[in-house]
Amino acid sequence: MMGGDLVSAARRGWLGSVMLFWTPIFVIIALAVSLAGAIALNSVAFLVLFFAALIADFVLGIIGVINLVLSTRDLSQIYNEPGIWRYMRRFFALYIAGLILTQIASALAPNPIAARGSVFLFIILNIPAAYSLRDAFKLLNKLTGITEFEDAGRDYWLGAWLSLILVGAFVIWYSYYVMIKAFGKLRAQAR
Image (cartoon, rainbow, N blue to C red; front, side, top):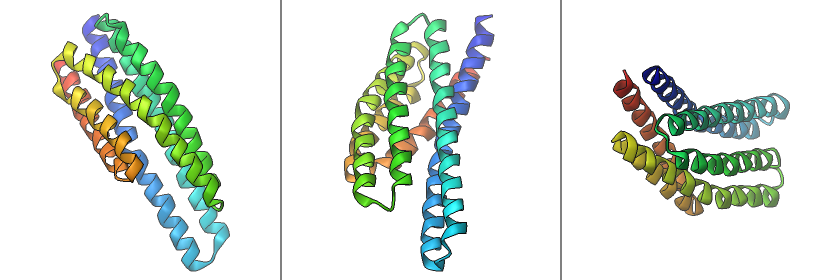
């Protein structure tokens, strides 16, 4: 029975990581639509597309992080290591708060001061979230022997800090790719 649970938890973590990996694509689409709308001066159609892309990003991000958190909850139970779940609950609370603030900032984009303040607040919330993710993935590395877990946690943590100078988003995006590899290896290991 445990093998089936492990496969299911690994599959859910892999799916969540894939969803998170694709979320920046929708942000890029939203920015491109916003730029195209400014050039074309046809604000209504482009505004609708802009918000549709942001909503898709938000929904995909929420579903992705929920899958990731539920996967680690299951892995915490399977490996009998409550620390994984404790760290991921903290990560989840801070990540969701940051995600909601980012969406508010995007909706307030015409007001640059509010947008910058909300994005800065997201970065500030993401740094302790990154510590929690890093610690949870460090435990997963220790229990599974899959070094990509620790690499993904470290990369996310580094990306959160580098977000202060605007290059961190790319490092976080890369960490999602490493998470996909880690959960893929766990799926193969569980079979």
